[in-house]
Image 1 (cartoon, rainbow, N blue to C red):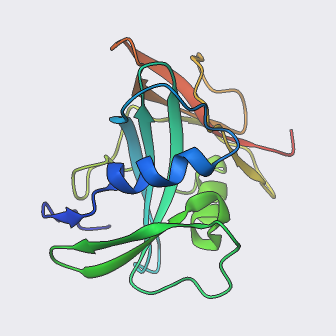
Image 2 (image 1 turned 180 degrees about the vertical axis):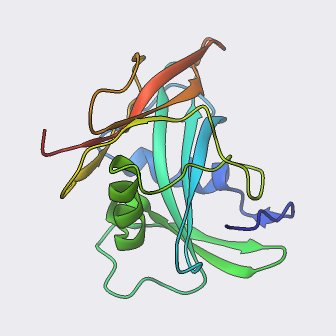
Length: 182
């Protein structure tokens, strides 16, 4: 299980995302300032990569960004995968990558959709996030992130549904990740 350090991060995750998100094709500019809107974590079995599925909202939309936190640059990272670097008060320099383009994150998302990975609370160490619902499937999985969140009900097979705070302040649930093979 990952240890959550309650410390400084300069620049913050929100500051990194405010600079990175406008360059993404699925981002709709003009919604206003970003605020945290929920999410959860997954644990890397090797303990090397931090994995967070973070939701952020502006005045109009809510977005999902899967992030990988690494202690060194990702070798062979695709163009545009790096969100940015930040100084962590305990761990030092962290490289933040778009999880959709990080092999460790993609593997854990596949494990989540097969019911093999346990979602963890975003800001607590060793705390299962019971609010995340997964309808697992068997066999190979091709995880696809739902970047622009829209309200949804219970998960269909091969989906993970979690809560987020919508721009109007209401708590809703959305599909965060789904099996792209279906």
